[in-house]
Image (cartoon, rainbow over the protein chains, first blue to last red):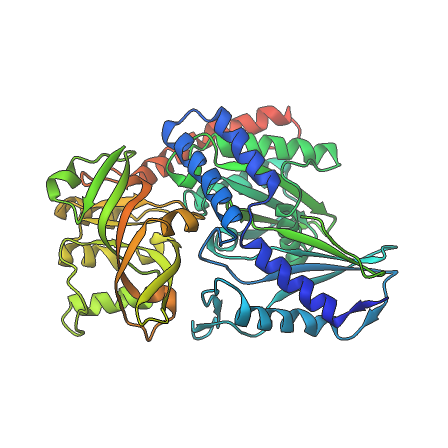
Length: 289
Length: 207
């Protein structure tokens, strides 16, 4: 039984809808842990309200945030799948149908960058990154809607043969610039190396990793731990009104490159919207997150 | 935690300090739209008719989904804050012209806004981002929806709320801003933070 147009349309639409209503379990756990160690009374209270809000949205099946963002997908095709139909068009059609039927209805956030007009449809929407997984008999789909707190403060700069010190300094410059703006505590994704576009994708992919997971490379894992501690020494705190908890995690990914080395820094706001499913070649659908 | 009736008197506003947490009862007016704030600037300048009185009002940067009910009334399906700093250049004029008593949203406002707020006696309140269900549950009545030619979250919506919050006073009416203080503190700490990173690298990683 192949991966069909209909299955792809349904899965991508569902993943977007689900992502708006639930803070991932690993994120709720991280918020609760942060609450236990937070020393600032306002921050403690804010973390309590965050957890309350997450649970309220989940139990009532309502949106956590009114800004549903724009739909962004990372889709990886296993090399052992068979495909029946235009699964690329299915993602577009799934979103088009969803905006007509979803309850509660979405606000219009798809924006024409040339006119600033907003609607439910637009060029290249949904935004999809396609990849391939060697040997897999499934399609792996992650949905991560992007709005201000999960998109506006990302940054990238290209260096020539930078030291680790310079790379880490740049990450901290981005943390300082974002300050109180991105609904902290955030998940920070850092990409190092590759090319301009590849590096940006690494940073975004890093934000999607399971909360607090460590890179397999010990040098990178150590950098993740250092940068998390450093970020939480800035003091911006939950909702940027002060506290010990500015980031819940820092995830770093790298790729080899040329020596002109891009460094990209992406942020995901505290609700950390992220859902993931696998469509198997035998017709099964597994919701992973 | 203080509980305030809105619109609040200047004495009550000036009694608040940055870092206080409050709950609100009363009338608030909200929008998440830059075109809406621009229209309000035109109203203040006398080139557009103001659709409702805003003198001394609480004007918040909150987006909402408003729609008509089958019975011909109005309802709000959900509301939540947007980033206030987007409106930095336009807010001082509005704060002064209307003598706003409260502004708010998320992320704060800049020094120019804080100066205008201190002049008129106005506080900035920080709403929880990602708090749609909690904020929406405080709505008791949709009083009016204006400028319905705009997309839903840009409309100028006036609501009666009960127990809205807790909200954090991010900027008080005495010119103290948590956002400015925290930005200054973080910048001042940065040399020590970078030295800490260097020490944690144990000399590895270059200068």
